[in-house]
Image 1 (tube, rainbow, N blue to C red):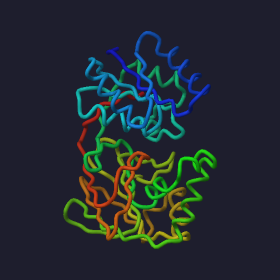
Image 2 (cartoon, helix red, strand yellow; image 1 turned 90 degrees about the vertical axis):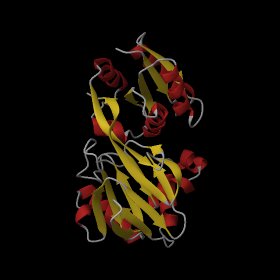
Image 3 (cartoon, rainbow, N blue to C red; image 1 turned 180 degrees about the vertical axis):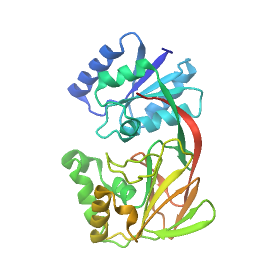
Image 4 (cartoon, one colour; image 1 turned 120 degrees about the vertical axis):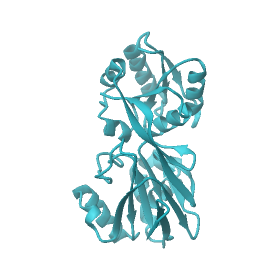
Length: 286
């Protein structure tokens, strides 16, 4: 096994983080060095330092946000990504079939089987699984940290209820510089899943050289409830007010700035552009 650096994001603080760290240290033994992140963005900086010190396998130990930071820290280097899914929801690991149990996931890394997957971008920001323009990004942007701490996942629902009572701006999506479509909420995926095992992008493949998009025309409580039910039943792509597409690149603009998220973290606002580098990320898989 190559020299391995684990970038551990102790999202849970205190005793729980110490227990996870101890399990991680026992599993890795002398096969890896562990670096603990201290603040948002530190995983990217720690990854850059790991590369400077000669590590060619960097393992993201955390959730999708940690994976995103590590991938951006790799910055296209000739290095391999490993994943230990320690977040609340680990959609990219789920997509790859990486086990959720820490010791089993470490066994996958030790075996060292790799696969090359596509690497999407929002502007210059790389992402591995999903980006959103509109509703989900707006919810992330408007849900205060203390509300999340107090109410957990319910906090996002409370924010959504408030947002759905307001008119949403129209998004203009230009697909492969040719076709224009209009809607009020856009999801862009590299894999099939969003938020868990919800197959928002049923035709997506991690290595097909294409982005998958799902553009929703309406943004009111009744429409969103119908969309959610459609995703759960895997019928949403047949709805007349949902436009599902594949593209190599797309651009999004709106009549006022709309927030954009990538892998569950706020990235910026419209206008924005999405592109993809085929087979640009080597990742360890089962």
